[in-house]
Image (cartoon, rainbow, N blue to C red):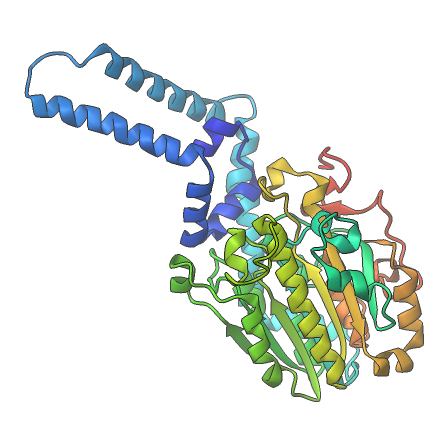
Length: 446
């Protein structure tokens, strides 16, 4: 309600999903970082204190005019907001949004978590048995990493020296035009980690996850996360990751509440075990540049730089990526790795669907290919290098990972597979926000 009064932004299904998925730590951060929230709290406290002091005086006389007028104004402002939200000409549509579209999103998560047999049947239908190459394949999911704040893409501060350097390395491909399929983490991951995408509508709406497919093809699977280990409403990623044979969460709910979350660098301690296998898929979820930004890097990190916290958090992520790729290069069994952010961020604004700007979807992305993979599959390497400037949305990462693993499947057409010579997605076709918006248009496609 406070958000509605001060910004005029109407509630959407994305708003409701974000509220469902927000944990107490994020709520407290939002409350104290949004100036309107403490203002309303102070106003209510002042009003309550005035009523209390009047009662303490014990005098049987009307309240002062200023108290009456102030209370009436607060009441009318609240009443107007409720009225405009519930009874104006768009009320029926918003009711549908709040109580139908939002619940539809969670029904998808419920269906995924509950219907293991249907998912397995779909995998058997779409995937060629006994396909897939040996080796370790790693997917690294960043958080709120903006391409606009990355020096590898032209930002004035050198926030990503590693990404800038690998652009010319033979074993890395820096994708120039990657975008997110949504601007909130959970909607992104429900597509990034599953066969669902914005461009092809399945006749049978069952969307196996990348873990389901890898398990079917005989891979060990592991999910390592530095984010909130929530449940259905806190974090639907828990349902999607449930198919991984091993799941590691670095933090607990108490860590988030007490602002004692571990830094992403602590993930390196889990690599020796995670990268010790003949045939494995490892998915790593970073905390990246999730707010509050100053919490994302150690206090003694880059103290010589007079940068804003967001830019420092990007630099810290870049230093971690350097460590990860350095490790991958030393382990011959690591055949390929992909880094892609879930969505971007506009520092000071954030990433909200109802305030969508293209910058919120502009993300960095790179692909690491070992020497063994490049020698064994030169055509795949050439196709990826050919598409370095092509537009790509991260709901197609599922297809990319399966192609890197050489898991032959029929989930999507070749025109949506960036590792294929037939890949043809253009800027005009690129979508976001569940396929409802063209990335470079604010006009809804619905």
